[in-house]
Length: 421
Image 1 (tube, rainbow, N blue to C red):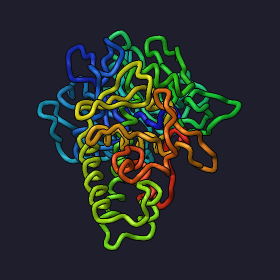
Image 2: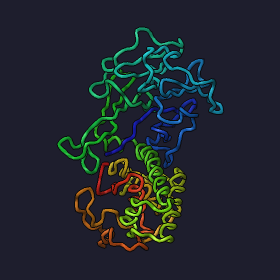
Image 3: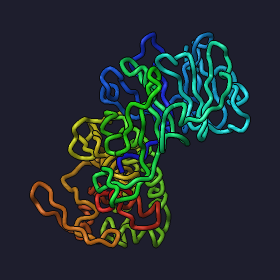
């Protein structure tokens, strides 16, 4: 799928000559280093520090300029919150964006809010549908004769003339650039690369780069795999944030299922599918319950001991008790469900690693398709359904698949056998 990230916006660090931007998506953020052109250090997804309801799904963000340089502004759901840079505490109550920023009264939601760059650095831009308004910091008012259409004035075309997701303003050598993001429906192959003639239908991010000084779009990237590859580490880490949320939802459902007395028929069926016993004794149930708790604790601890690693040849890997790494393939080879399943799998390796690692698809029929038996280091692995209960209780894929089935009510087995879902 390449990614399901919806870029909301970014804030540069409040320095005289900043090199870092904090980039937001959903309820998570990643710091990007514009000098190194990659996520800062090795990076990790973190939850923003803004107060609710501005703690997720932002419309955009701005550092104040001119008389307002002591503040930053965050926008969400038709309202904004002013934050003091010293201490990062709210300054006053949330207020209507349209009423206070000279926007049309019917702009009760916004697609993007971002600062100008280069020769337009004294302005801020508010995008709504096919139109935008330019705000002048020195005048503390919107510029005259706005709103204007995005397409003819930002010289964009096609998907980038309306309904943007958000924007990232470049810094340092990219300081004249605005990166405009939008989610589009496209087709990709199994590896997440664009394939117009077939493959999987997905919704994925694309972007164009606008140069404020030249007033021209100077680059457009529409292959979802290239979007991931060109923003070194950004999309895998932001994808990891949303994957953590989904994985925790599944684990919560699984924990509730195994805590019930007696176990529901559907839970017993899931035990049969993934722990190879449809009549688990108390020891088996207690073991599964305890290990689900360990998985939840590990997922909740992310971003601790978690990073993006360039050039990683697999979606993710873990050194038990030390570090979980994700690479670009975490985004390109997996859809949102597959990424959540991967993080549960890796949490098992982190907390109770063993030599047992049989994929949930090995030798099984998944989504109506007979799968081959998995091969690891030249050794053919057994069919998933034939491993003994003792092995299943330490098998990472067993917990990922069990959590999905108990939470969703069906044996989904998201992962390599169901790519891009």
